Amino acid sequence: MIDDKGRIYVNSAIEASIKIGLLLVVIVWSFNIIEPFILPVLWGIILAVALYPLFTLIKRVLGGRNKLSAFVFTVITVAVLVIPTILLSASMIDGVQNISAKMESGTLTIPSPTDSVKKWPLIGEKTHAFWSSAATNLDGTIVKYKEQITSVGKTLFSGVAGAGITVLQFVLSLIIAGVFVANAEGGKRLTDSLFRRVAGEQGDAFANMASSTVRSVAQGLVGIALIQGVLSAIGLLVMDVPAAGVWVVLVILLAIVQLPPILILGPIAAYVFTTHDTTPAVIFTIYAVLVSLSDGILKPMLLGRGVDVPMLVILLGAIGGMMLSGILGLFVGAVVLSLGYKLFIVWLEPGNSKPTVDSK
Image (cartoon, rainbow, N blue to C red; front, side, top):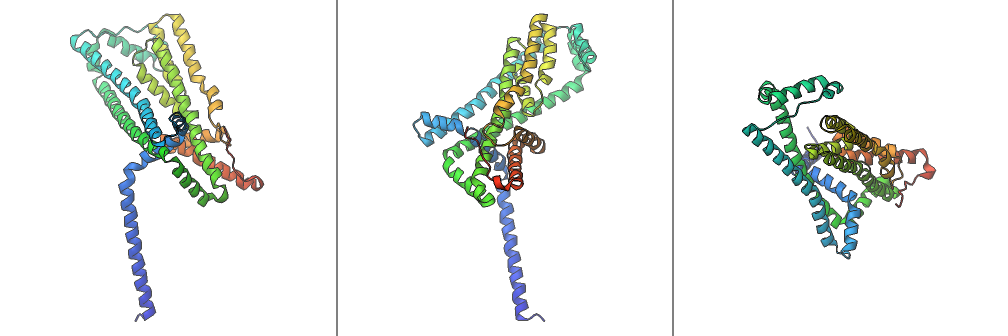
């Protein structure tokens, strides 16, 4: 027999279990509802922090009008993303249509490769054979390599579709970033309060370091990648390399993941030797090498600027985070490892425990 106390205990346990179960249902349900928006919101926060100096500049030019500045900020950033995307897409569509029209009319011709193609490392012989076959008998080559060409085409199509979805996500994230910068003061108060709850009196310093780290990664990794992309575009356009926009995008992606752009520019330089005179080809090759090595000069200037954390810590955090969580991890990894580094220093040197951020 269960006495009154035992019955009360059982009833209380059952009631608590029901409440906990209902709470879990609400939490899981709420998470499933907001899950599609988590990634755009995270990107919106990162973009808002990284581009906040641009917003303050616009706000200063517009006389401190907050809502108008946020609207102009959103329009400018979305235009900077969308306009090049439209131009690149139009260029690719025109190129595909031009090739299709020439194939239908039978006027598509491919120039024969030079013997220097055979000297390309690893792929020279096979590339020369395929290129020669396409130059002499294009229709037969297409039939012979139909499966491979179809597979490459499907891969390219899925890549283009994925890139389109990514652009749309970034447009949504930029709009969210515009909302965040318009309410920057409230967001800063919330962030400071959160960090104070976690880190006590040092919370403000950690919050400032987190925002400075995001800006540092945006300038030092993404910014350098864009600079290398622009420099590559100049060289490719001067040498009139086909599909220059595609190669520029690949250069930027490689630079973001910390791979040398020479992996793209090197084969293009070899191609230039087959289509141009020796002197301009040599000049382009030297230019491509300099573009690929430019990050060695730019990283010390931009990466880690304004943050009291070694550049190596930020770089390792960005690369490790990206390997773990993709492009988003590029920023999150740098912030987390920087905070971990500062916490380790606080533990190691308790007498000098307050993290600092440069005022630059």
